[in-house]
Image (cartoon, rainbow, N blue to C red; front, side, top):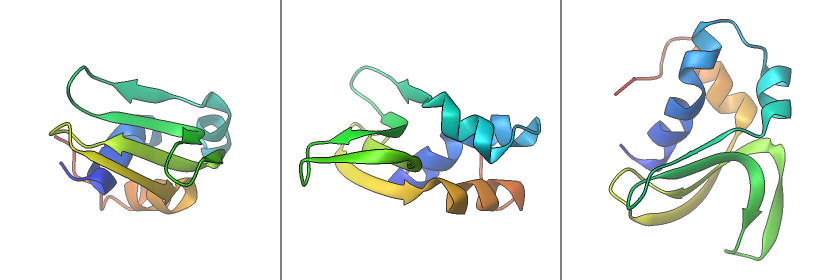
Length: 89
């Protein structure tokens, strides 16, 4: 699973059950697994020493545990999930 797929995986189930983007945005949810991925809605990323609003999904490590430090627009990932383009594991 690459960083973009990890971002999709974080919210896919919530989109499928009908959660709004506003609900996801206000949740600041995240997922983490030891020696594996770290994905969160909004937060701090040390790369560029920047705080990201909850309009972004931050992926610190992908499923292989590789540090990726990438940010994706929540709206874009939400729309992809909504249109069925996202793949679940």
